[in-house]
Image 1 (cartoon, helix red, strand yellow):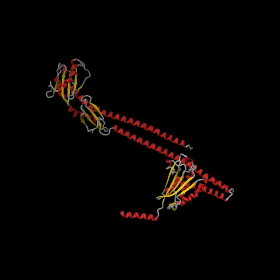
Image 2 (cartoon, rainbow, N blue to C red):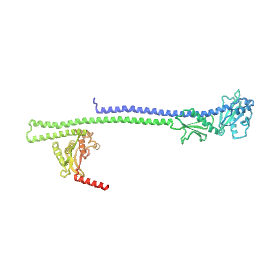
Image 3 (tube, rainbow, N blue to C red):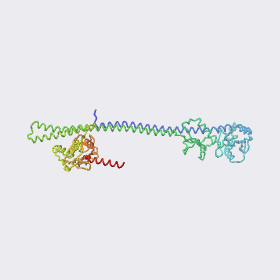
Image 4 (cartoon, helix red, strand yellow):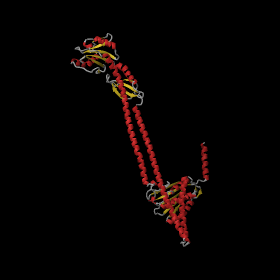
Length: 552
């Protein structure tokens, strides 16, 4: 089924839209999915890092909590029955690492002064005044106040006191059966031991129980002043991806993690960008293919339309001379010609229309030969002026019948010979004259100019017709092309004449040019190269050989 051109174009654009919209929707959905995947990957990665930090913090917490509960868990009788010696034996027996000092505070006494444990003599003694003792006093003061008030203390097992960061203290409150405070057991922690022993142990245990094959983290610990006090590798100026403070002691210190290699979040981001780029490139290729198909289809439709117009115009062009030949032939056959002059006139009309018909058929045949690559030319040394004059003589009958006047300029100026195919050049000139007649717009003067311009022989055809718009002047030499606007489009023609002219002139190694303005006429110029005499060619070759020999 043949659809109208407008409907075909609408169908093409509808098909293009039907491809474009799902493609855009698919890209949008993929982009949204990749964004969610990127966000999820980042959250999962951070969750993994936080779990690792939690594991390190838990190891530190377990170390100190386990040591404190193992060593400081004293019975209430130590304070209520005055059995400090028993507590000293307990401390001596249990032993503990990472502690500067062990001490007890008897809250049953009025003063409740701290007593230090001295391992050498396995006894408790009042210590001399020192900043450490002051820190112990400060740490135990709230508990002494609670004991003096007789407050009931429940669910308190271990407390950390870090008001003085130089003396971090763990306190274990001891209560009687009535949950009233009777004493305190405590330890002053060793910061160097924490830095050099506890932290490496906690990190190693966390790594041993944590699947970090792809994570491969750098662990760093910073103190309260932001100084790095421990690290498993150089971060090279990078900041930790996640940080977390310790939970029980050294709570003003933070442990941080940074991935040794590309993080999953970074890999997800790269994968996201790669997928987006690939999807966009694929979409661009697909759209380019669709646009190319659409363009090809549009050009095919345009070519089909031009061919249809060509068939229609050629049919019209054939019909006109055939009708004239038939009319004049019938007049001659029926004997209605009374004088020999009239017979000769009718014969000239028949001959002119036959030549016109032959020219049209020749154009079609030449075009077919050109398209198939079988067009050949026979070059020989000719006088271009004679070819032009002979063509004008043949074409003159038709022009006179149409009321046109041809003015030949430069015919009396001698021109050098040229190697041309005389028939092809005559055909080119005939096509230009035919166009000048067709597009004259009622102006009957046509000028043919012959001249020499350097190494070129110029044959120019000038009319005073409707002219050609500037943006169409480069397209008029294309096959089947006809100007789509103005009066030019209203004239019937095959659209092959100028295309054949260009092919013929190109075969002669010449050029064809056009100068035109709408409403002011057009000038088509054929430039043919002047034949170089053999003597001149020999001299030129000799000169070149001499120059080459000198250079050698």
